[in-house]
Length: 265
Picture 1: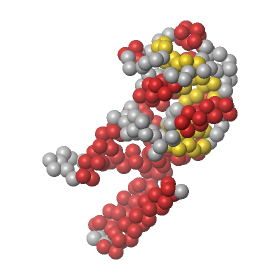
Picture 2: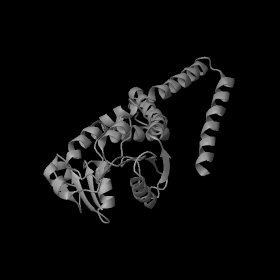
Picture 3: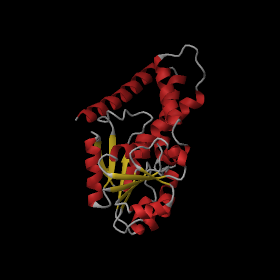
Picture 4: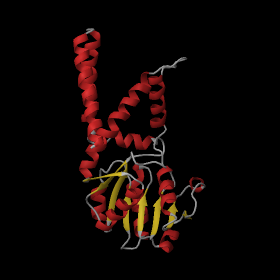
């Protein structure tokens, strides 16, 4: 299959490495410097090269902010039967765009990034495939993600954004708060160092990606839950309420234990 990847960033390069041995691949990237580390693939910097390539599948791997503009730029240069796809972290507005595009489409979200994931061992990582869209496109990505050992879940566009608001926004906001109040420690403990590594990884992500995840329409409700829990915990601390603290620890340990049990099923 002829596959065109839009964007030679971290995830774009990942997909090129993954697909280039079994498919004829190309990458479209306006910044030539970003293509220095792409191998076994054709490198395009003009739309005319896309015309000549005639891709059968497009994987849009640009920054979330530019997902739709990137599609709009290349659509006039794609064959009518070309399937278009994205791996965006937030699907807001994409459904409407796809329905008006005139192309078959498939939308997925690999729930990992090169920052934290061991790309050689992805069996503990997840991927979401959106249930709307082209059947054969979904089969292609389901097969691809299965070969990587990813755990695959299927959601609608709306269900995806609700899930991401919980699974990404809560840890991101918690990390932001930690980074905002932290001070240099000459002799940091193990827990502090672990949180530091997480903060460094998250803050190494693209600003627009972080912004789009936090601007998810469902994020506010999740952050409100954090505020509610902090208020309760602060009250326990201020009152030195030993019984309240015991009850609170019992509650959160049960939450963690229940989640571990669900993961093992």
